[in-house]
Image (cartoon, rainbow, N blue to C red; front, side, top):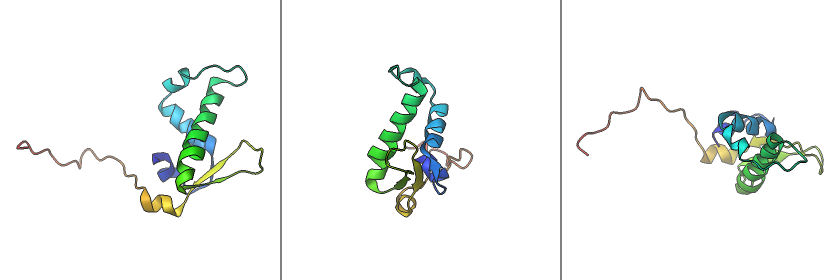
Length: 104
């Protein structure tokens, strides 16, 4: 959701998001079972795209998915207006964090 909030205004291939995700969490790829017909990275990317976009975010109408044809594996993702109405993502500001009240 954070990646879509930041980059979703432009139409981007789903691989863009999965690459950023697995760049942040590379150890997750080691947990993928080797199926023999694709690399662990390809399997992880495909799984991320299907579970994140097709089976979750699209279901709520928060993204628009475009493909060039029915059998094309390339998917292009763009957030919808509804996404921006429901989801806000702001960076954490440590310096501006209020001090904790020691009385509570």
